[in-house]
Amino acid sequence: MEFTLIKNGNIATVTTAGGELISFVHNGREYLWNGDPEFWPGHAPVLFPFVSALNNSTVSIEGKPCTLNDKHGFGRKFDYVCESVGEDEVCFLLKENEVTLKQYPYRFELRIIHKMTDCGFSTTYEVKNTDNKNIIFCIGGHPGFAIHGDIADYTFKFNKEESADLYYTDENSHFSYGYKWHKSLTGRELNLTYSDFDRDALLTVGLNSNAVTVTPADGVGAFEFGFEGYPVLAIWTPPFKKAPFVCLEPWHGLPALTDESGKFEDKPFAVTLDPGETKSLTYSFKAL
Image (cartoon, rainbow, N blue to C red; front, side, top):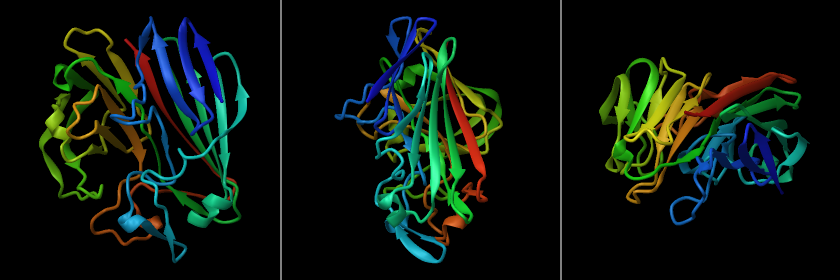
């Protein structure tokens, strides 16, 4: 089921399928990726309860092997309940079910709150532990933004000075701190080409910045993306496709490490919640 949100002439479309934002139009311009399956069928899916891939699709939870076959987890695969909807805000809810409990032995509530702002929107992920034991999870966003022309014509400008490595993931979407890309983020500006994504996503870890401005050469369609509270920012466009979009992915977690223990609790940036505790994270978009 789809809903339309409106504020200041901006129009957003959201759906209970995956709890996803699927369109955002500002001044007649569509900023989100349209989901063309020739390139990538997503728009802005949630990544939960892990990000990217696991080793052999398996992770150890409470000493037992758990198989989760879907890359980026199951959070984007279910229909959500619309808990509340207003003119410019919606809250979707997913709870554990028979399917999730077979893969991930925790009871939880995952709320996705999409809220319109004056020139953009925010997406908040709120995870509540409804179990009688601690739960562990990773979470992230995967919003895709339409680009016009070549990605090389765009500048990514961060809001603070940086001296950070760029990392890549291997053919199995696994990660190592030894997988350093030949480019790094020095200063505030980063320029990329399609060939930079030949290995898949590029990752930054522990940035000083909490926002990045994406600006084309002609300045038309520039926007700011905020990722406060997320320790990892991935940048992705499909390899070898020269796709007309780029994803900015704030993650609270990392892909499977090549040398990891295989225990969920050992995953970098995994979140542990006590019974009744809630974790909330927000990313934001602003058209400039």
